[in-house]
Length: 272
Ligand code: PML
Ligand code: MG
Image (tube, rainbow, N blue to C red; front, side):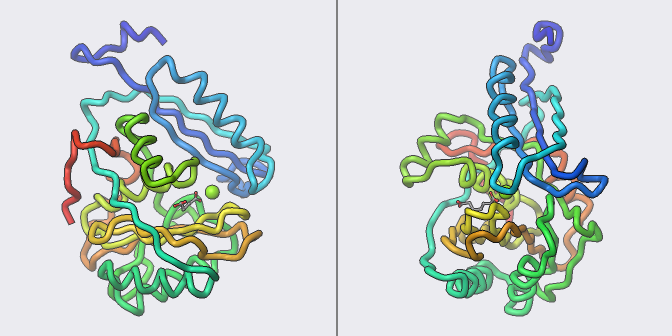
C-alpha cells in the first residue's frame, strides 16, 4: 500500500483488520464460530497484528479453526467519533447462581425491568451455541426486537484511541489480557448508542467464566462468574428503550468508526 497516495487532507489512513475464524467451514455455511477480533492499526503495525491474530485463531480454547476470513480496509481518523472508556468496577460473586443474581440486580440498577433482566439472562443461558452478534431486547417488556436470528447485531469498527494510555489505565486497575481489553472497548461503544440502557455479557470461551453488565448509568460492572467452567456458550444482550430507532443503532454499531479514550483527552460523554 502506497501510503503517500492514500493521504487525505494531509492525514495518513489507518488500517482496520478484522478476523473471524470458524470450524467446519465458513460461518455463513454453518461453520461453528471459534473467534473474532478486530484492530485498527497504523500501516507499520499490520504484520505484527496479523501474526497475533493467526496465532490466536490457531490456539483458541473454543477449538482449532479450519476457516479464517481476514479483511483489511483503509480508514481515516477524521471520520471517527471518540467515546470514553466506561468506568470500571468489580462485583463479588463466587458461584454461577450468585453471579446471575448479581447480574439481575445490576441490570435493575441500570434501568432494566425485572422481567427484561430475567429474560436476558435466560436468553443467553438457553443459546444452543454462541452467536457472533448480540440480541436486542426491549428494556421494559424483555421482548427480543432484532430479527437477526443467530447472527445478532454486531459491534465493529472500533479500537482504543491510544494503546499505551489504555494499557496503563487497565494496569492501574490490575487488569491485563485480551478479554477485558476487548470487552471494555466494545462495552464503551455499546453504551454510547442512542436508546441503550444496558448490556449483559458473558464469555463464550470455555475456561473464561467472567462477564459484565455495562451501562451509561453505572459503567462496566464486572462479574467474576456467570457460567460453569468448561461451558463454551456465552453471548450478549443489549437492552434498549421502547421506540429506539434500531436501524440507526445498527448503523452506529456496525459502521461508525469509534475510538475509545482512556485518558483525559477527546472525551465525549455518552448521550444517554
Ligand atoms: C469474551 O471475551 O468472550 C467476553 C469477555 C467478558 C468479560 C471480560 C472481563 O471483564 O474480563
Ligand atoms: Mg470468545
